Structures are given as C-alpha cells and as structure tokens.
Amino acid sequence: MPRDADRDGRRADLADAALSIALDQGLDRVTVPRIAAAAGVSVGLVQHYFPAKADLVVVAYERLGARVDERVAAIVQAGESAGGTIRQMMGAALEQFLPLDDARREEGRVRMEFASRALRDDALSRVAADLRRRLEERLAAAVDNGRECGETAPGIVAGDAAAELLALGDGLAVAGLLGGDPGRARRLVSQAVLRTLPGACRRG
Image 1: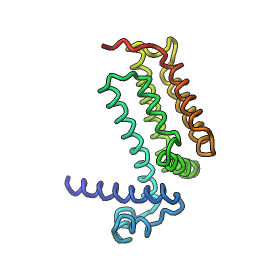
Image 2: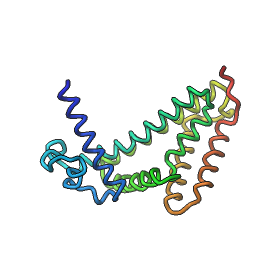
Image 3: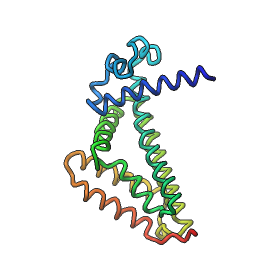
Image 4: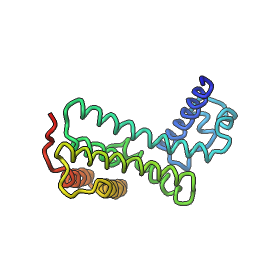
C-alpha cells in the first residue's frame, strides 16, 4: 500500500509539473525534459512513471479538473458553514470557469487547448466527458437541493437546467478569452442562476 501511495503521489507531482508548464507557456511547450526540470528530477524518472508522454498529458488534464473541483468544494463548504443560499454557491462555482482574473484566464486557455486535442484523442476525450459529467451532476444536485429548500423555480428539470448553465458558462468562458466583457459574463451567469433558483430558502 505505501508503495502504491508513493507511486500515485509521484505521478501526481509530475502531472502537476506538466500542468504548471502548460499554464505558464501553453500545452505545446510541455515536454519531458521541461517536466523533469520543473519537478527537479531526471528525464529517466519521468519516463519511468510515464513511459508515454501522452499518458502524462492525460493525467495533467485530470489534475486541471481536480483543481477546479477543489475550489468548488471549498465554495460549497464555506457557503454551507455561513448559511448561504444555493443560488449564491452555484453562482460562485460557475464563476470559477470564467476568465475573471489571471489565474482563471490561464486555466481557461489551457482547458481550451485540452478540449481541442480531445476532439482527436480518445483518452483526452474520455477525460473531457468525465469532467463534464461530474460538473453536470453537481449542478443538477444543487438544483434538486434548491427544490427541497424552496429556491428552485417550479417546473425546472434539474438535468436540463444543469446542462443549460454549463453551456452558458462554456460560451462565456470562450468569449472572455477572446476579449469579452468579464462584468457582462458575471452578470449573465447571475441572471441565469437567478432564473433557475429565484426562491427564498426555507431552511432554518
């Protein structure tokens, strides 16, 4: 068990190094020598854990998704602790995908690079589909939770609402990367969330 944990930890560290290069310089600049240098290890060690660079790129894509998942989970935890509404938490979660600051802008650019490659790469396509499925499920669960406490509008279908919100977020993220107004993007997300969750929560 410890050996497996060490191996998983080392692979995660190398994938994080690859992701860091992608965020700083673009996905095309991710090479085994650069990853080794960034991680402070030998090229041979990188190749030991990832004999194929393509496998490392897949894990780096997964790590990018994990970064956002962790931020969203923190938003939900903080919101629940503060007694916030589901509407507030959902809006803040969706904003994690908008290029509203330098860090999210770089994440958005790399996410688009991964998505473009996923169109012709089955392994990356599976990662993209899994990330999207998890996010849709989380948004749908939030809509269902909103129904229980009185926030969700009558007649809303949770899965459909989740897909629509995600599609809006995707479109606004791309528009933002191409020079769109970040304030407008934030406003449109807020309005869409409000249409889905217009009620006052009855909890407590």
